[in-house]
Every structure is written in structure tokens, then in C-alpha cells.
Length: 160
Image (tube, rainbow, N blue to C red):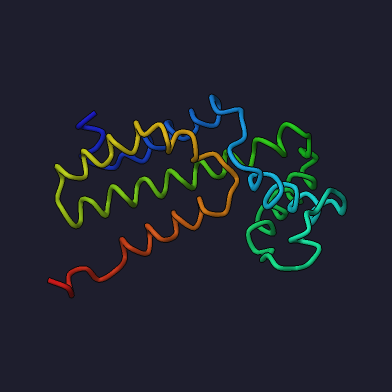
């Protein structure tokens, strides 16, 4: 595994996250559906249940709008089958989370060197909690990835 960590472990991370889509078939929190997929379905197809937060307008539609755009594209391609509408957002989350894993690995390498990056990569790829959470369609997943990417691009050298 060390050789996979020396260059770029993205493929390892991607395999781990796609594996999680396959093995995790449960729900974790209600927000996976009621604050993401169900809202996106309503935006894309014009029907579906909206919880009170959406009826009162206290939540941002930004994240569900991204999923709604994906649903619309699937509809235009005539691929808007229930199974695809359920699994495709989870696959997108897994791919995006793989990018977050990669940037965590890169940040570890940047700040602490190759040995630290290797161990970070091993821990990321084998984390049961990340396996459980990565395919979840909750907005905190993409938020986490964007924060990790921002931390990687932060000018750490200026602090030394």
C-alpha cells in the first residue's frame, strides 16, 4: 500500500468510496432524504414532499439545486429510473469525497512529509466512519471536501 501512497492515492480512495456506496444500503440521518434528494426531486420534477423548513423558506436551495440539475440531466437522457435517482447522487458524493481524501493526503504531505501522508492515506482508506458517511447525500460532505481543498491551498509557508 505504501507504493500507492507515494504518487497519488486517488484511485485507492475512489475504490474505497465506491465500495462504500455498494455496501452501505441504510440511512444515517433523515436529512439524507428530506434536505437533499427529496427537495432536489421536487425541484427537478415538480412533485414530492417538502418538510416545513422548505415551505417556510429557512433553508438554502443551493445544495439541492445541484442534485436537481443532475436529476434533470438524467431525465433528459431518459435515465430517470428510481434506482438511478437514488444511487447516482450517492456515487457523485463518493467521487467528490475521494477528492477530499486526496486533498487531505496532499495537505498531510505538504505540512508533515511523505511518511505522514502515507499514514494519513491508510487511515483515510480504512476509516469505518468515512466508509459509512462518504456516500451520504448530506450537505456537510461537500462542505467538508471544499474546506479541505481550501486548507490545502492556504499559504502555510507564510506562517513559518
